[in-house]
Amino acid sequence: MNAKMRLLCLAVIVSLVSVTSVAPAQENLPQPDPTFQGKIGKTHHDSEADPALFNSPTAPKGAPNILLIMIDDAGFEAPNTIDSVTIELK
Image (cartoon, rainbow, N blue to C red):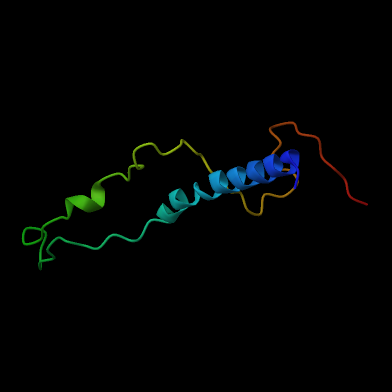
């Protein structure tokens, strides 16, 4: 192997390792359902809420800001606004 081929192989290996190192962040999704730690009584006076159920989820420290939007069954007219052009199919 010549030096250029070795350098190319090294670059490919480094790029693959850097891509696979992002995978552990995906292990946090979807988040598991929380378990109820409160007390359920016969009335609301006898019951106690579980404050952990009302806490907002937080990202791990150093996590990237990612917004994922998934749209299903949108159709042809969904991305258009008012007075959109209608496409007639013949």
